[in-house]
Length: 318
Image (cartoon, rainbow, N blue to C red; front, side, top):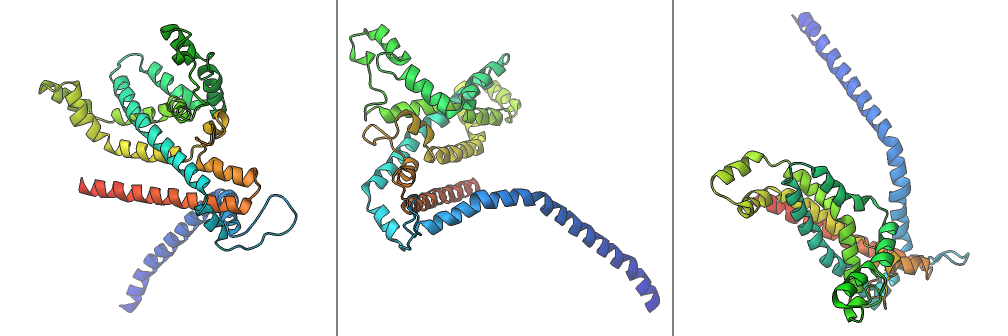
């Protein structure tokens, strides 16, 4: 009897070993494919972050041949007492507040209108998404030279024809006035990046069953009622995704501001990224710039975690 049980256990034990060996080979193959990416990721992301944290506690500089001196939290103390840091942080937050609502609302409106088009929908897709594929340097130079040039740009030329060339509206200092510079950059950014959110919303709209709209139309619901009770609620997850991506993208604003205004006039548009760029590569204070980077990284991380927790709570409540 015992011999028969041992014989019965043998195939099961052999099968278990075979499965274990296959799983081990599959895991090893997966790690082999991931290894090149992990090496590049560690060299170009993890290691620079470690160096950034290390340098933030020193007086590391790009000039001089001497070694850096450990300062402890002195860089952070100087940072929080620097009014330029707080003003540049506010400029970044203000840009985010100004740019996020139009980039979300207009993208939703245009996507809803495009989704109602039966023929030639690809024309609207191309028209809205085409600016997004342009390099930021091209977009910034087009708007800086051809649109915002006082008395010469397309906007001032159009306003001059409408209100007269002698009108103050025909020569508005779009990028050279502290009152209009940030708004001008926001308009450029909306024109440039609207297409990305537009495509996300259009993809979400095409996932909504058409039968829901047909049933609502039979019950007498008009276009506004359908949008309010069907479209907007069913696009909730898409809207949360668009909001999260847009806020993170706006908080990283740098390129178009640096090209169009260089943070001016009178540093009224300088974002936080340009602030630590100036500290690190203009003033050569790598240690201080690293401290700014660490603080801003923690701010973005805290905002991302807060948004994630809030979104999860909303989904659980729903």
